[in-house]
Image 1 (tube, rainbow, N blue to C red):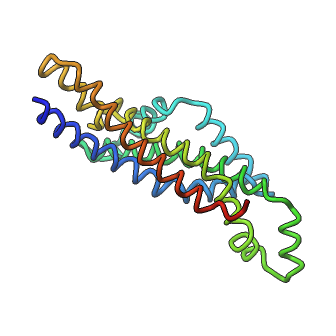
Image 2 (image 1 turned 90 degrees about the horizontal axis):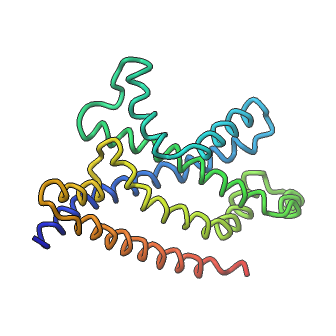
Length: 218
């Protein structure tokens, strides 16, 4: 029974990892783009972007999952996500990417704005373009400063993937719960915690190593 449970949970955990990896792949660069919008001097860009960030950060991710999955069907009377497991996964991925992009954008914004203005001015005196100043002077310092908060959000993402089960995405928690109905046992549900702890522990070690590698700005 233990082997059967482990293999079943591993199958669900692969879905969890898939959602986790794809969310990071899309939300990290999108968050940087959104942060530029939130810092724009053009009010027509800045205000809507800041409003969207406020809405996303101020509402539960579970609610966003439900709205994104069911909303198009209710409003447009059309299933834009497709049918079956694939459609539900795509809807969950879109919800996670939007949510985490907004959180990452605020971390990026804080990191960029924490760089002293004098460094921008020094780059201009040396004849560097704004593009060169950002990528050769500012960006490396920003990365060093945002690694701790970014790592916290990423570890939170590991656990938040469990919310995908509200739209029937078969991740590890869903698989753990299934044994309650099928076999009348609850310990597989608690066993899922081991998978989360091990994965979070590996990420913690990874980000600790990255922080040490980026200690050149001390």
